[in-house]
Image (cartoon, rainbow, N blue to C red; front, side, top):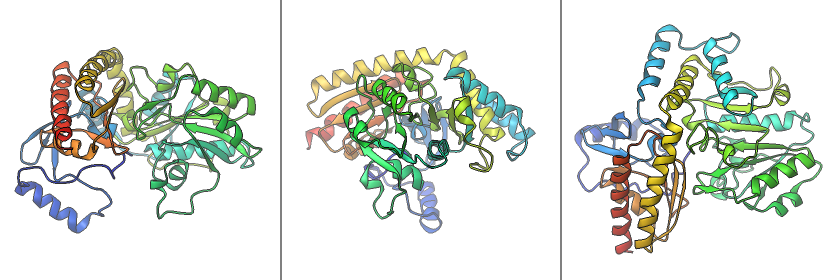
Length: 413
């Protein structure tokens, strides 16, 4: 889940419309206020565009918190889900269903040839990975090393694995067994390992941490350490997996294959779904009765996941990601050259981070006033997770509006 404490929540410059206000009133009375929400009620989406209750149109460069990798309502996914809904919505995992098996096969063939455990979200996928690390040694080697700046989810195991104190406030004590190392520091990792260490968990590209790829040689070093010390190397690809980076999975950019990989967000093109992939040999340790997910791998998620894979391949979208990324990079590097407030630009496929010296929340608000939807993480990093179907015209429009917003905020800072 994306961070929420750095988002601007002030209203747009115009008064809130009556339809939107009516929805807000219902939320104020009946919905737990655990999210900071913008005063916008979205009712429809198509591609990289969404519309609110008053009919205003927005360009969305952060669709679905990164879940809508194929844009809003991609037609092949919509059609597959509609057809499946009319045939079979849900059955428990005490029975076989054809879509789930085909989905697992498709993911296996595009990754490292293992097996899949299906769930509903990234945090659930990481919980499964945590359990697998411990079950491999029947709990004797229960410690897992994670990294500062990483983010692994909101359930207690996953939030304990997240080495960011702000997510721990008021929730202690954390689940025991997690040890935190500085990102990129192999020596620190070596020093943390003892007889109780069972695994290493890392995002190949930090997402919520600011769109930061692993330093050169770091993942290779972790693979070497894991092999030498008989540890499981777990890659959290909840944000960078499923084609977002221009390859099927982030690890394929680094030439380092994990023992376990977790997926969610864009896995089902906006439908809730998560997965943990691991080798056939390791999969046997997650034996019956030790873990489950009631809705995991349900027919709706499975056909959505399959349709997403087919759409990516049939429309050659991995190559399209490379072209769109190059265009974003050109535009944003040009902005950096003319604006001192832009300290850095990081573009890895459709994962984009613009590091600022000014308040990112103010930039998010300025973009909203221009009908552009973006995100801020880590206080000063504007994060974009555009759809891999985005057109060149939308890239230019988005960069124009974002540039104007950054320049406006910088001028008054």
